[in-house]
Image (cartoon, rainbow, N blue to C red; front, top):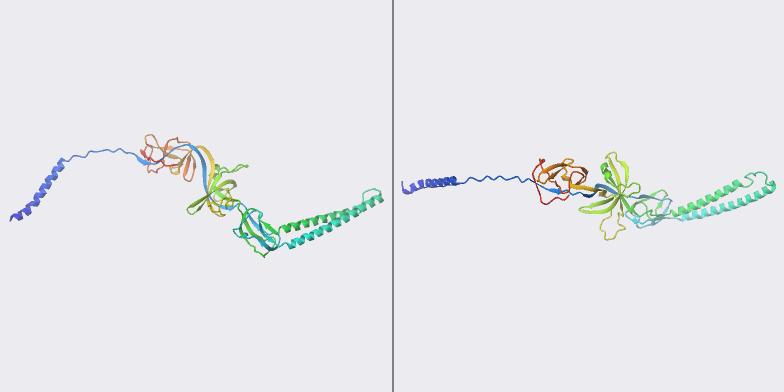
Length: 391
């Protein structure tokens, strides 16, 4: 074999032999790794610090806005419409005493004249009968010399009574004619909004016909269904006392508008199907007629669905925790001084939408865990996150 061929065969084995020797030296000379035991620092949790303070109970609810006053306008007399207010259309507004419409009154003016003439005739007849009665009594006293009681017919007593009755009837007819004349002009009974109307200029309206519906604009009411266990926490007016305040919120997309309200009464019954009690919240000036023009809120229209926050009783010393801090039904997790989790039973006064009110069982300054932990047990080591959760 040539020298070149020998090198091609031997050289790879030499390379492998040198590499194996280097690897063996490295393996023999290496040091064993030092075993390091890491201490368990605990599960990372978020907490809230216990602080007893005065707190006002709030009850969340929903309801639909409705008018406190609603009236159907009925024509009391008949006649042709000769005047119709421009605002007497659906959506129009009136102040108390404003004229809605007026009926033709010529027939009622003539009725007053006829009634006046009838009254004059009745008064004349009464005067004539009184004169005859006076003459008859004088003659009877002269002829009978006052012995015994005379026949009532002799002294015109029935005729006098009949004449007086005719005068009273004529006066009543005159008064009725005047009232009918006044009823030809229909005025707004209160500050109102026209919900619907059914007459037009020149139309003949018959007495007793409904011509429109009005809604009061001074106050709106919201009937609010509530669970029975919410009633003890509310200040419901009794015996002239004032009810609790309320906030009424109307949402238009992502924009929310608030109105102040007040709890005015309870309907005093329980819905037999849902077992819910119903209270009434009043809102003054829902159409913002008494507010400055800069008020950007829309009117609180009748039929609007709104959210409510009812202000209830004030508790002197309670702890308010996030709803998620409550475990099971009446326990919380507390972090002790050794950073160990402790399961603590507490007195739950009320569960609200996003919070829970705690009475006894916690001390000021204690830290309550709000993080959900799987398999948490008493004595579990935890690490508290520096930034606390606000209750």
